[in-house]
Figure 1 (cartoon, rainbow, N blue to C red):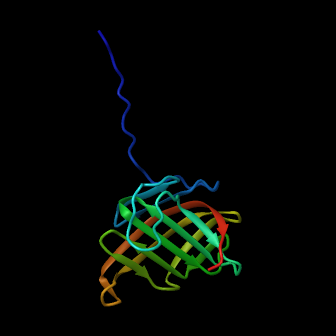
Figure 2: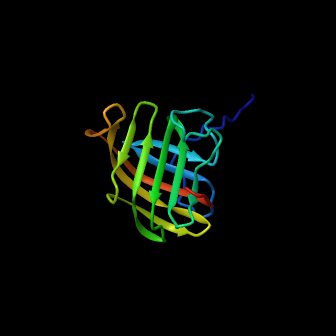
Figure 3: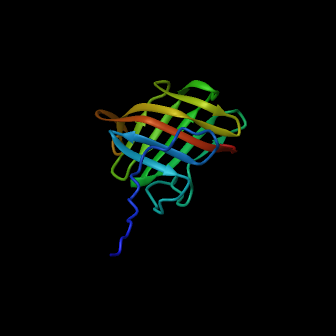
Length: 162
């Protein structure tokens, strides 16, 4: 009698809350898991911001402003802008979220991000709601709100001049 062991397929889950600059990003968007863990999903999405092959990353300009960018599965892109980053709770100045089917935006000073580490590495958690942004009319449509929950990230920080 021959026996074989099948390796069970690993079920995707949110990345652990780490602080090592591992290039991880994940959250629940309307309850659906969206992750990126230091690798490319190999797609070219809409807009000038998408660069295939890049893991999530953070950049800080000479004035200390921080930008967190993640190109994640399902052709989603996140961009966070924080003008006064520090360990602890901070205000997200603005957050942009693009999908293959639409563009979402959350207003300034409404949402919060919590940094567990902020030096050469940025790690922490976040959650926010965002209204749909209609690119044709340039208006926010609150009835098409999304909820982003249980967000976490762990990225290295580079420098940039905006």
